[in-house]
Amino acid sequence: MKKSFYYYWFSATSISLADVIYIMVITTFIYQKTESAFLAAIFPLIRAVANILAGLSAPLLQMKYSFSKLLISLQFMKAVFITTLIIGFPTISEHISYLLLLVLAISFIEGWGNPLLSSIVPKVVEKEKLVKANSSLAVTSQIVQFSGFTLTGFIVIQFGHMITLIGTAILMWSAWVCLYFISLSLKTDQPLNNPKPNSKWIAIKEGWWHLWSNKTLRLVTMMDVIEGMAGTIWVGAITLVYVKEVLHQDVQWWGYINASYYIGTILGGLFVIWLSSKIQRNLVFNMAIGSLFFSLFTLLYGLNSIPLLSLLLCVLMGPAYQLRDVSQQTAIQSNVDTEILPKVYASRSILLSTITSISIALFGFIADFLGIRWVYIIGSCLIATSALLSFSLLKVVEKKTDLEFSS
Image 1 (spheres, one colour):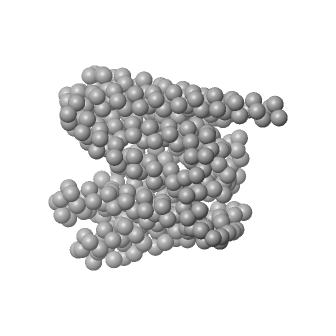
Image 2: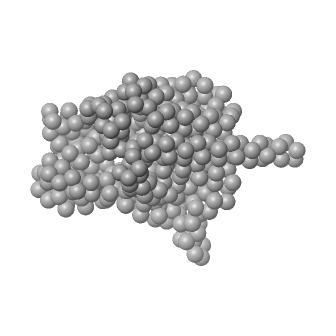
């Protein structure tokens, strides 16, 4: 691996941990300050809406500024806003509206910056090592999220919101330094598009056009949408209902299930790293196998009533999920030019955020009126549908390979 990848690895890990701490601190602070679940729920809603709007306008920024300049500028701004939040916390904390405005600004920066961050890997990693790189990043991300969500609450109770936020700022500034070194090695020194008549509209729709016109990318995106819908069955409220109504256990089992799933994804990531070279040669096939097993384990999980078996199934889901997810991520990176990739990720983010928001409400309705088991049955059917699409994608890839060979 190149040195720039390790810079990115550290940077991505730092940003991931900083985001977890930031989310936990702001959510707990708003709830403690207002004692209102509604106001606490506004925080993730603001982040979601801002990310969607930022995703729509991201291509305009990418058209005007070079990749490397935009990358380090946005992360610098995010670090500055987090630092501003800390410095002004005594005043800002007395006015929830000020805090939410700052959250809105930070969320827009995240919406503009995340597609760029996601596009770095194929720029700093050789194509034949993409699976290994993506799985290594996935393992670290799962460890960081598990540790962050587990420990942040304790740290906030022991040291307070402001001290905990200082840790977020340190992580963000460390990440920015690493991204700065990465930017020095990137060859993208020009804006992604040259100004042309109607170029703004062309820039906005370009990512969407690639998602639809590239048959491989179109099928992968359809799989992402279906899996995005299915993924909402794991939101906290639905899992809590499952624990109480199906497993007949206390709330602490909610934590056990989450921990089991994280352990499974970490083990799954290590499994994918171990087999990375074989997976790299058969991306679509492994994507299909991962989806099939994930669908099967989800169905068994929904039908199961034995608490210990539910934990085992959560662990088993991890390798299946990582195999599918890393293969999909690598397939996107392998089928899209690195110059267009930020726009594709921006469009994909908008699509998945919208689908996820709708699906959360839909599955909540299903849980209330049909029962919690139906949530997991329908979820497993959706994942199975995605697996069938991946077999269709396998035929497309084989046909493309045959044409290239014959030519």
